[in-house]
Image 1 (cartoon, rainbow, N blue to C red):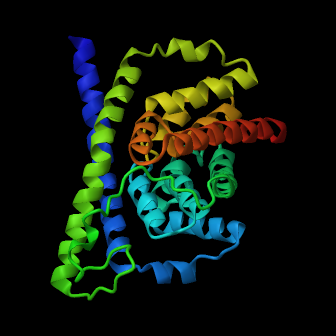
Image 2: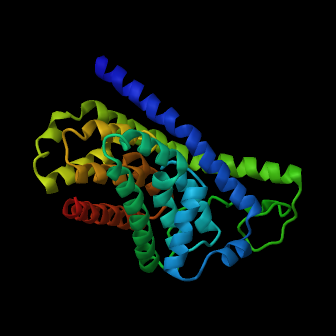
Image 3: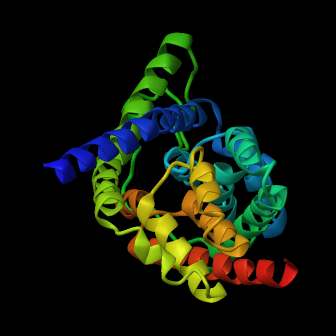
Length: 305
């Protein structure tokens, strides 16, 4: 009974911790859909993949969202014909470099090890840029979204959507459009979040923590272990810094940095959400790149430190 109780408590915690940010992400997505035209996006985003990905990273700072909320926003950006490299750089950077996460990371480490704060920020930006560019090259001009969120979008041409029709704005109609698109986006993502949060809660309760300690004396294995731990534990990026701080006395700094980089970019619940919205080949490629590049960067930290 204690196991079921603990799983229920952790599931509820994960779900309700994520839900407000998910709602925020869906709302931002709906506002983008209603007020930002394809033509405006086309003018604002540089054609150059490197410059475009830099814009995506900056969007991640100015549109603060947690790792759950960025998925509907990035999907909406792709629907608006934003290049894949821009959307991916935004999706990966925002949960690491947004002001709320920066503040929590600073508070967790500035007294004990301020280098970790700077490495998370620096490598978070570099990795987001790099993966965005690579994904943009691999999936250039390919359709990566599995379903059409806007299939009912053009039923009423008085509303603006991602199609090529000309629509007319009005406060009432815009409000209705925002509410409808928010509901559509939220429903698309929340069902996968529930399943992902359930799996993550089982992992948190049933995974023996002493397993993590077995490999802590080996640089390479400790990085791999904490990357897997971050993936399985599925913590929100606003709170994972304090868990990372608690592991600092047991694991080396490079593995802690790997943990702090991977968790916000991908975990179990986000994998399930991504698989529900993007094509499988796209998701597998993205996750593989995240693991490989973070592992390499963490090894570089070993050399630097």
